[in-house]
Image (tube, rainbow, N blue to C red; front, side):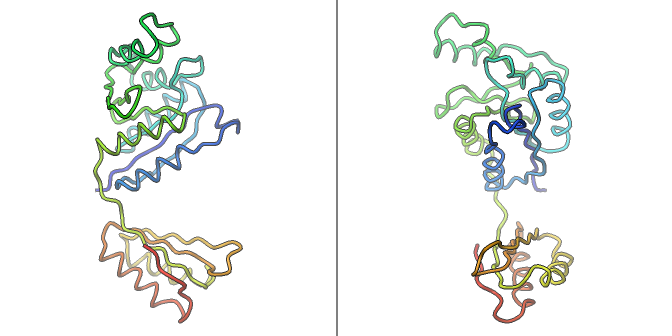
Length: 244
């Protein structure tokens, strides 16, 4: 069975248009590379109840959940209490996080700095020399920062230490045929090859092709057969190229 994931992007700055989200794109690409299918992406604000509701639902639906944003020392960093509320626990100070902060900031931490050591009760932290502040894991939820540079360094730890899956195979078929004329053939291939995920993407302002058809499957033989059915089904001379 293919493992699945949901992504929750948290931050009023995303919803207001002040900051453009790049974290979801990065995580989807990286998760696909290690064989995990992302089935859900949501963007919500810095609201404890909304975070609690969203994370609780997504956590029960998918094998893995990745949150981005809302962890830090300021008043609007409410991801930790939101996730804690979702599962009926309290935010607590994690000793390993506090020790790290003491080494970084000095022995006397301010209340705001100490907030950065909070985790939902029962969470674990994952330490690695390649990252600064350790990674927080609560149940099946990986709690990640919103700053892209920090998120990416922690995400590389997740993919390197925790997951070792195989990505699906992919083919990209570029055609000089209109999508509307391809639709009956694509529908037929979809019915015949249930294990192949097919996408059709018309080109805009391209002279070399009209549409790109993508095919994905973890069954390489099935994928090859589906691609061959497409190549044999289009009129002669309509195939520009096939890419893996």
